[in-house]
Image (cartoon, rainbow, N blue to C red; front, side, top):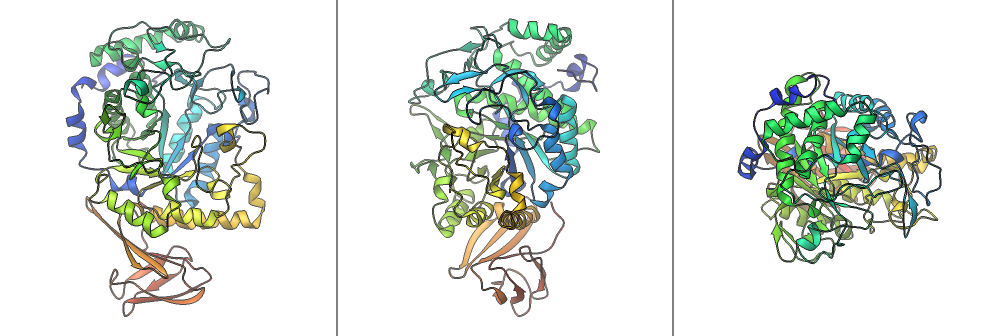
Length: 566
């Protein structure tokens, strides 16, 4: 991977001298006394790069493949320039977005793979071929650098979606990886640690040997590829420098640590969303976190004008079926993930946060039951000091909340007002359809962004609703990171108060209020004379005699002191 600022491989020797092996769990966890409240109050926007916006039609079919995949299993043209355009247009600012997460941008397999659903191409980004190059269907390294720079200019952080568990499937255009790098069986049975980690998740995914700790040579397929691209000497020199600096063996996991953290060191990626985390030996994630932490410190030291602030590197993991209050279907659990014969605390293995895959189930509960139980878990409960990322819809969850989009306004309220960080899946804010005729499996969740629906008044109204909630979260970390307290059952009124690490914030939310003129007690949360903003109507009011009075056409009131966005 080219590192132009440093001038090649020698840069990696002089940039950082501390070895990954010297930075263990104690060192990382001592440095982090608990999750930064920003991350439990953040709003994350997640998109399939290929399905969001086509910003450059010239890269729509970089591999020259026929359009012969099954329904919604071909590349459709979305790319990095499309994301950048929406950043510069202010689309994410208007939604109150703090963090962008897009599917992996690294080079994918060039051919197609056929299974029960029919033929599929690697449009989704989870069938990697080369971890050192941006996939040309998405754009170039320069496009990615421009996108991250634009996001930082808007105060938006960027999470890279990273894969260390598997390669893409072998096809006539994509040679197999050598046996000292991968295993092709057995299929995981998910009944034990070995039956989840030392196995292949699916027949299409050759499992990476992250258990290997001895030297293995570079795969011939990469040697041939890099030689043809004219960068073999550079890539091997950089690897030599990395392994000399760290003293690590040339094991597959350490090659990947080098390749993944190069993106952080060169481009200033703020964090990783880790794919298939439970299928990899957990100590590998700790090592990745250590090297990524140093890489971001290094990038920020070289780019003081481009960094947002000095927040440390962040990692959130996908541990499938894992969620707050237990597993996805409410099997009793704790912070540990139970493999059956072994329990693992991923938060002690490099992760700040985990995706809360239980939220689509819990969202069927009443708001008060949902909000109070989540607050109890995050404040004084088993998840105190760590983070969760809630979602209602995602790219591969077969049971999203409200799949038919029957209650899109209420869906937004439950997600955006729930304790914890919130993940908007592209199109949630426009009620993008999740039931596409002719699709099989997760393809129905992956249609192209429904921009054309903005011509409809009902879609514009829904987007406005999401924007108001997003702006409220963006301005007030207390919404996601504060302690929840119900103040009234009907109308439903609650407060959130955040006192954490020098951060002081509080908000008052009232739902099911009358339209028109309304008077609302502030329950002693704000002193008389305090000027507050209703983030739903935009009105500013002053507390008098322990109450505020306002007139709006909405039944929702979102009160907080007006302040600059964090």
